[in-house]
Length: 427
Ligand SMILES: Cc1ncc(COP(=O)(O)O)c(C=O)c1O
Image (tube, helix red, strand yellow):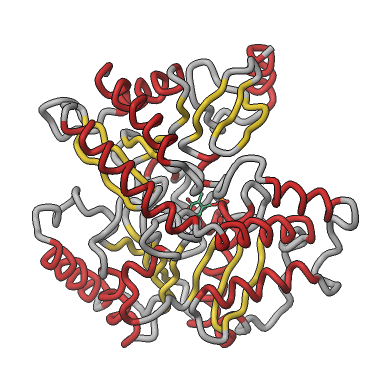
């Protein structure tokens, strides 16, 4: 049955729509942190559909909110007042820490980032954007134009002039040998130098922890140091919180807060986890920036009643159950366990991350060379043992990505760590 589906998939969908596993998996249902395939096999889910199932699979509150709203009204467009959209916008504006915040809902992270770019370039009347090396911000023509990761750059044509900045990857690149303070100083000096050679940019866009790039991040405080430089020159700071938002990193509700001594970014984008699988993305910016457009703009499917009802139920559950605190506690245990496991494996270069956003970078034993084949083998082995994980990375795809729903229990963390122990030993 699944083979038949695979043949049909390949015949009708694009070749570049990659599937995991030599024998791809069809998932049919889930509950909590587990999912089941079409053959009835159960898996512990450490990837949550690319960090999208944020709280839990089949969370009753979300299911009830969706069913209830679906039975009344799915969509009306933003031409009419929409109570769930206003409710969720108010909650998000308040949580953002951005003064006089306005929220615009989209259907995806890509569309959210495109909107942020539209706002920043219109506000600053500049077509130039600073982005980080090894970044990923989405698949549209605009978002590809700020992607610093070759594996996700199908074209070099772009509506923007993009300059790539150092700093998103701590342990590779020309500054890797420096200590944290020196690393930050070198990146800031590079940024200042770059700004001396270019027309004034509109904004810097950055993921606080690079997602697709393999869960890499700069030392805490780097973006605050950047912000000081940008602020002096009126350049906006856009934080792409599509993967890092809502407490996933444990220590903070937003990823930027690891850098936040000088306050929130000018623009925050979000998507993925807030809808727990429903298509919600969005942009938060202070009113002055959000309102700078002098023509109409609309996202027909942005903020539909049914997605907003899901988002509200999901966010309420997250806050009432302190899932950020859970991510910090259980994620802290998990990363310690994985570091102990990794210390015994010659294939592991680094275990990094925070909260429930953990990367295991694999290299060829005795070298610093990325090992994408080992990463693929690890994914297959984990699946065979009943664990779903992801992969990513800029230098070939050699980083295992671990990002379970934020409600992960200690027992489930132990179960997953034990499987990863066996997987790494078997490489
Ligand atoms: C940091 C980041 N920004 C933006 C996007 C794009 O989001 P979407 O796939 O919902 O368009 C992604 C998707 O992986 C992402 O990881």
